[in-house]
Length: 357
Ligand code: IPM
Ligand code: MN
Image (cartoon, rainbow, N blue to C red; front, side):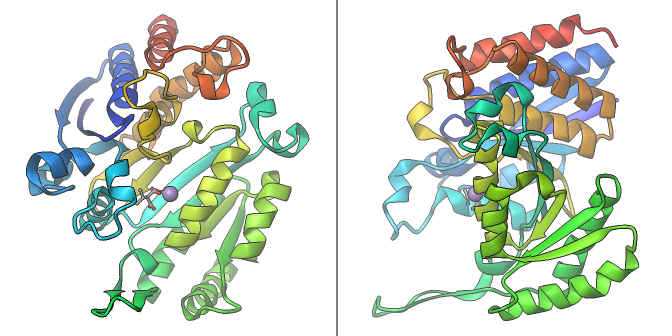
């Protein structure tokens, strides 16, 4: 099969973890006889420095003209403490999500048996945790109008808006995932307060009876934040709006031991994007210490969701499991000896090269 992939390494540790994900992707292509065509494009602070725009049109064209996008990370500390910056790297990510119509962000959270003790939670709470967060990605507070700071600088407004259509498509997607899993959907909202959440819950209650074989549970977001810590293994598919999903997935990521392990898939109207959920981690940039696993597992999601190549995706996951079980891991999840980003990537590549399929 011909696999045409847009590659957007971005900022911070993005380029170094991307290098390993591409090495793994190439190894998989060789093993299974696929032909890979990579097209690199700029984004984030890197693109602001080069062309003044964090998601240039040329980059958008590259994304639209390929079958999948692998995305590293964006962000640069020089913008973080400057709330008045008019062009920010994050705007590039939001523009990409909006222009590619990426309304669903799927974030799988799965515990790895051999590093359970790296979790801040007790091992018995974390063991067998395996759930998906489906985060709505192109609506809510991130995009609602009006927004802005008043001319006198003394008031500010953000708008949380959702339409029936936006809510229906994301909730239906949650049911289609639950159907293939443990058949439970948890709808997370703040319907005791927010109008958007009340519409969200009303629509969920219309859709739920159409899936009698799936259990539907409703949680307010504050309660969900607590349940995720107290009882992570009770979740199967959790669906929620954009901002709640952003916050809950950072929380969920540490359950499994490191933010450096969680991949994501953003799917929607045009080309799908596969990206780790961690950010650009500027403190580690260029040091060859960043964990490449979230990026590598994002490539695994790409094989599965964008190309429907499940054996390929499975082999990547198997290689990652083996590297963790053998202690070939970066410092964030190491017990004694730790390995560099490139050493972990190379180990995965060797594992794939040697595997029999
Ligand atoms: C994420 C990130 C982004 C978000 C930032 C970088 C804009 O935190 O993908 O979760 O808030 O969506
Ligand atoms: Mn986030």
